[in-house]
Length: 377
Image (cartoon, rainbow, N blue to C red):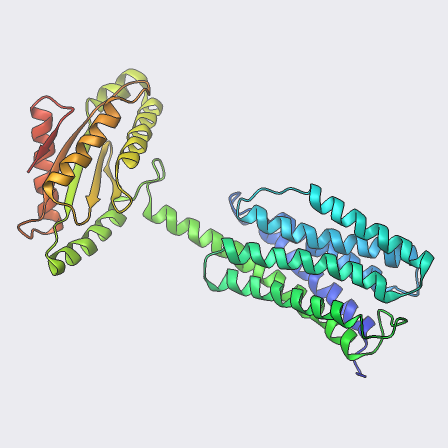
């Protein structure tokens, strides 16, 4: 027995999830379009608010409203939360299986009052659906979210709620068959209270997830070129400095490439800057394909790009550079273009600036010797 009034707890749950829904709706317009799922989460919490209000009227309003409609609304809200997280991670949403599963559950819930007045049987069906939805939901967040607080916290809250729901499902086999929603027992108190805290904490978790997504995008924009998606000059130089220190300590070589698009000014003059941007993007695409996984490509300025090849000597670098040059030359993109590439290796333990100077001189030598070629410092 407990002194907690469960009907009051359900009302409190309604107020808290309603507030979290309002917060998410207000935040939705503050976030850029690439932060998906907020509308689903906010709508789901608003639906939970409605469900809690309907549940709180059990015994006051008609059973059709407080049993069938309330359970339908609750199940829809849980499914919508799950869909929101899938949208957040850019995963596909396939509602067909959930519609079938939900229809079967609702059919059972609807038929129960005509067969038995048992709260247990109705709740068994609802908790089975809820536990399934929450376990899958927690799995999606844990699997696709980064291992940082926002995602781990939200996954933990939803998984905990799923565990409590599953335990409540098991307990139905030991409770009295005539137990009601607001039965003042320990099992019901824990079960109803878990929704009180779980709904509020989950709403907080979704807000943290949205904020984390924005922060990640801003960090990406700060370190990557907005047109091509390759590293910005500053970010690339920082990686080079780190690799240079490691190269000096280990005694292993590293190589830098500088590549410049040949006659790029003519492309802009003849076709316009939009076409010029398209050419730049094409060159980056082919260069990225030709580079290895460990290599780093950056935009050094205008139509000039740089690549870091860790633990790579001059001979290996020449093979990579020729692969880039050939890929660009044989591209079917229109207008056609070529690149001139300069190579410099730190065998003499130069600084990054010194290595870039040598690579730049080699690149200009390639230009002088006819373009569309590779020269080594």
